[in-house]
Image 1 (tube, rainbow, N blue to C red):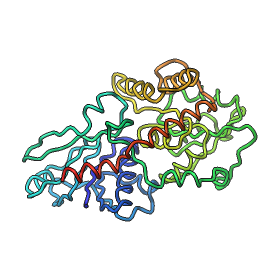
Image 2 (cartoon, helix red, strand yellow):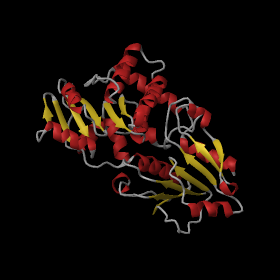
Image 3 (cartoon, rainbow, N blue to C red):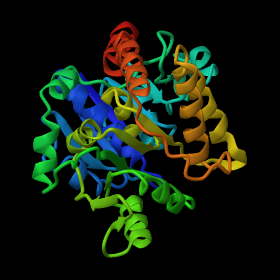
Image 4 (cartoon, one colour):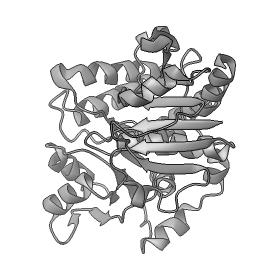
Amino acid sequence: MHWDLFCRVIDNHGDVGVCWRLAADLAARGEQVRLWIDDDSALQWMAPGGACGVAVLPWPQDDAAVEPGEVVIEAFGCDLPAPLIERMAALDRAPVWINLEYLSAETFVERAHCLPSPQRGGLRKTFFYPGFTPRTGGLIREPDLLSRQQSFDAVSWLRALGQERRPREQVISLFCYEHAGLDAWLDEWSRTPTLLLATVGHAERQVQTLLGPSLTRGALRAVLLPALTQRGYDELLWASDLNFVRGEDSFVRAQWAGKPFVWQIYRQADDVHLAKLEAFLSRFLVGAEPGVATQVRRAHRAWNGATPDAGAAPPASVEWQAHCRAWRDKLLAEIDLSTQLLGFVAESR
């Protein structure tokens, strides 16, 4: 089928990251996808080679004559162009119209997933919620993800960066928004042999400013990474002992990595984001050893500024690693997002 996926980039790369992964995954399963986007600049380094079956097109202007495909997805409530909606309503067989929502662990997601919304012209839009349970839309997971991970060689990957892990050295990846308390966390990491891999953007700038030209502090040494493709970023997560991630896309990929992670959730007004953080932690930590649960909650709350516990940098303990692998195994038992979308569209048509 032909899919039209609409994406607006807000102020970071999470929207385009999620949309590109979804578009590429659908295309790899034999679908034809047009990704309509208002700023495709990040794709130059996220996916420089593109993907067979995916066409990247500029966001259509109001008078653009876009003929819709069998499926139309508006990502994260980005609002479709009015002329496109008129053409959808004029067709003898209307496209399946889906609003792909943001990921959340909150309880309302199960109630709202797949709810229809009548639209003008007799159209119907369905709200599709990714999530962590069987009553949600699942998570993006490519069929070859685990096989790629199992064949990955972390030692060779680090050597390609010109790096070797030193004795007793922990490897931490850092992908973050601006973080007022980062200096205290660097102090904490500097007390233990640590190789810090800082990604391009906010993380790179802050680490460079706080550590200076030497990029060292105590037992901590930092490496400023080049821009990574999406597959390259997956490999960074696999090569690290502890991953600091942000937003949605890297957050999901950290869970597939099966490694300890700390999530910086996108900040919202009135601290709404902290309720979303707690909802995830409550679900994620079910079955965790009490010590692990306390450690993980403390780190997440501190990293997100919910407590004054600056520098609560946890070690990637054996127990924490085991819990992350068990959580990944639980997620693997759920149906992935693309498979669920394909099934929903087939049933709807």
